[in-house]
Image (cartoon, rainbow, N blue to C red):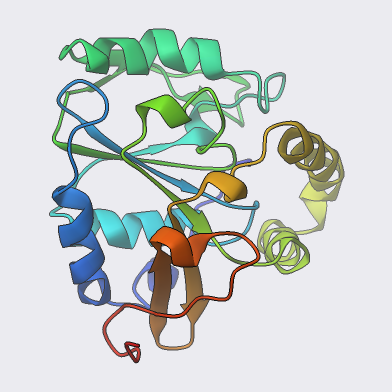
Amino acid sequence: MEPQQSPPSSRSKRSPQSLTSLARELAALPPSLGPVRLIAVDGHAGSGKSTFAGLLAEALGGVPVLHLDDVATHEELFEWPERLSAQVLEPLAAGRAAHWAPYDWVERRFGPERVLEPVPVLLIEGVGAGRRALRPHLARLLWMETPRAQSWGRGRNRDGRELSDFWDGWERAELAHFADDPSRPFADTLVRQSGTGYEWTSGTDATPGKAPSATEGDGFPRA
């Protein structure tokens, strides 16, 4: 989605300490992209992916987050896998630094080049982070379990009326993308947001259509 600056308070409502056990679990996974453990956070636009990924990155010791808002463009909302592969995935898989340029949604052009080193853990977040072109490179796929209508409502309220036309087009594009290339059926972990933090289910409990039998996360009951 078109990036918007979030107020600092929106990123500090939930302590990253609540994600400590999940961070330990992810850090212990085997590398999936050369020396890198690539962790994807997917979900509908407005589902809270960026905030959650930022908190998880803190819990992981400040690991980098690659935002797909910086990869997508006005002309390529979802048609970016080849560019991402050439600029980021292939170099990291070979243990080399990746060189890529984030897209400027205001100027409608790519900005200055950035360098991304082959770190032990890298988070990639955004709509389509768990798509089929990326899944072979992922160590774990997390899905934000926020209903589509609720997510889109949040996004529209956040971005205001001036972006309503953009949202109309985005919703059509997102529906078409997930109809052709769904992520949730392949998620390893489903993440839910509550008033006191996050809870998540992993493994067989994350299978779509199966009621979760256990929850994790500080402050949440454990089955």
